[in-house]
Length: 411
Image (cartoon, rainbow, N blue to C red; front, side):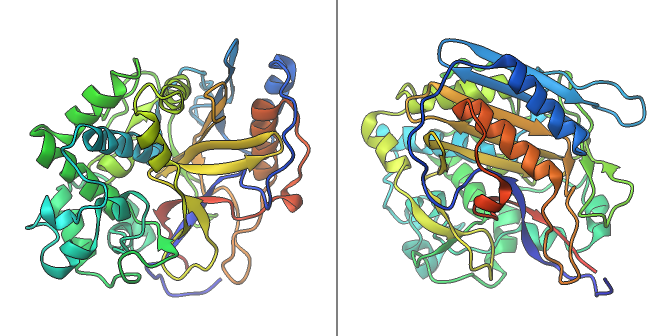
């Protein structure tokens, strides 16, 4: 392709399980460890550098890993590796905000201008509510589109430290994607940066501290944190970026300043911790029944500006319909790492899986993302983990499925 480099908001296809219609509820047998192992190996064999997965059914659990953490040394990946979970962070942030709603410090349908009048001033601050931030119906532009404007910009911004206010000001200075509250919404990381600043305003502590104290510790997580340095704390894989072949060979981006993702996507965790969090959340251990019901109220949201496809989104969480029923969770995509995390409504059956290569697909002559054998292998593993069987093919599933954000320049 011969194109000028442009700043283009797009989506990483990381939610590989939203089907075109809910399947009939199927019986979920116990974990078939042999099948799980084989299906995870198949993800690596299809071309993914390294992957790790944790699966539970409430009574038992399985964890595994396949592939390499470093393509040069061939160091193998391990199931307990720390991983940048990207926008799975949004569920943590939304949970922290809703806990403040529960104690009366925040009103869900109050304008954000009531709390942060200097951040979102004037009429806009009165029209955008806290709920609109959490369900992506504020229509504020996504600051990612202003940070990553070319292939070189990934490297140029690698160690730049951003202040949250700076990110919000960038977004406010860009054209909005629509009027506040109008459906469908438009997925924007800016919403969750403002949510982090809201937490700081009402709690009097940093957003990292608020989320750690009120969510991470409450859920009993031991390996989940906002890293204080560009290096991922603890044992971890390298993180490779291909950008659909525009970076060839893929480049390691495991070390970078973590200020831009912040409360929209800055957490590091393990797949086991992610499952433990969603189990605690969906069992009502972090939010009461009323607030959990608010979290599950979904609206149609487009994955980016100008995209017509939509998916259902709640307050920091979204549903996926598998052959054995409805699951809830989030996908996560940052430079070099992807995550999928889905849990049944009762918190029993769960799967969280991480990957260390981003943009592994290729583009057609029109710049559309082509399906990859890796996609099919991931879908099979998720179905096996969640339902005990894998019955759907990629052609039978609705694609694209769910979205996380990264700036993808094309040429």
